[in-house]
Length: 434
Image (cartoon, rainbow, N blue to C red):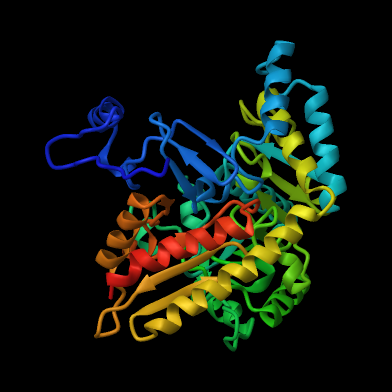
């Protein structure tokens, strides 16, 4: 049953989920309530269900997490089996499941070492620590180079590394440690000497850089890293003796039509950051290390975290990794990604003056509406999302870009028919928008 969400926010509700919404409103900050008030009860495959049995095609994937689909029985079964074993937590003591997961990651990615964490932001913090420790051991100043428009998480270090100034207004001024340079977007001319110029502006030089941290596509802007720029960036880091760190927290595990997005540009990083699609469900992240020498100087316990290596979460991770082992899921994502792009191209061609695809890369895309004076229109985005939800399609509007971009992120398991259905709902819902 694809039902409308008739939840009113102007004084009352008429659904059985009223208690949930009111309790959350009363006991949580308003800043946490950013999405449409659909109260999730369970999810399966490409669909989300509420308590009344109404269903929505999911175009959020839990923000790029449920890549292998919601409620996979392989994952749920592994969680249940681990729970029945009676080992729910182990801190950093050795466990069999932890050994199996780090081995599986090494075999799948070719990175010989990994450091397990919980969230993507924690993985970013871990990579910053590894990079700066490695640099300082060689007598370097340990500057971190990042890119304008980047988003790496919401912890202090991750937001200092981020390129969104509005999200850094609560952080201390560390511009002599975190140096931001223009992002080398696909199709744009870019010269790595830009990095040298920005370093010079803060009294630094390439020999003082610990790492360059970047995304293959920016989660906040959906700009894609230019292939030639990626090669030049790799060469600059090698000459400078700096680590190249790719944040694939959003782009990893098939989302772009390759297991990792760096495969599209043919450039391998020194550190690779994973989360979200890594377990497809529970909080697990990882820093993958290409050369064990980069972690040799760290003190015992310096990279540990209370819940990293949690047995339940790693049971889910092990089962989820197995779903990617033969490459079929990634191949399916590439095929469906082409279908998504073709559908969105038809959508923009109908009203090219007022519709825009911000970016499309495999099974992720951003769309926006444009006012007659060329400005992005967040009110149109909100209207379309509401209409889509009322007609059985669940969408997300991130807080970046002023809430004007609708981000499309279906599970990679979405079928051809399901994607066609979603495109039809979206096209009809956006018919009255600018």
